[in-house]
Amino acid sequence: MKAVLTRVASASVTVDGEVVGAIDCKDTGGILALVGVGRDDDPQAWETIARKIAELRILDGERSVQDVDAPVLLVSQFTLMGRTAKGRRPSWSDAAPGDVAEPVIAKIAAALRERGITVEEGRFGAMMDVESVNSGPFTVLVEA
Figure 1: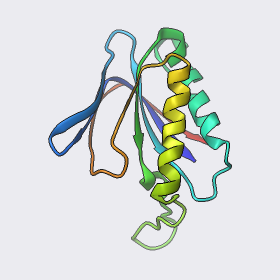
Figure 2 (figure 1 turned 90 degrees about the horizontal axis):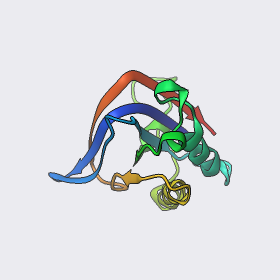
Figure 3 (figure 1 turned 90 degrees about the vertical axis):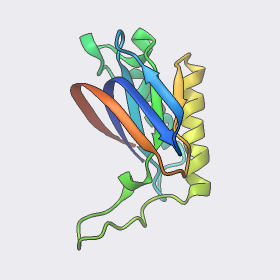
């Protein structure tokens, strides 16, 4: 499992002209979390990703989402699992199929909400337009 965590001032996901998830967090900052679920992930990898989203000290002042009650926009991103070592076309064979990945993304969202974190989401499997105003910019890759 991989996650790209970007510190943002705001971010949104639009599907077919409708905003389905958005955070506006200029005061505290927030996180746009793009998460890719792998076919061979450890069954508990989602717990590590949820913990990292909540606890990594990547907001201003070396604070975490949990420290400052910052929001998260969580977006499933199977393309993070693409292999590009050979050829010109990425291989998606490492990505988990939708029926496996969707419940994992739901578990991450639920775990963050259980911590009291505001979570907005994209729409699983949809063609999404993702917009963000990056803060810093500050982006990290987390693997579990």
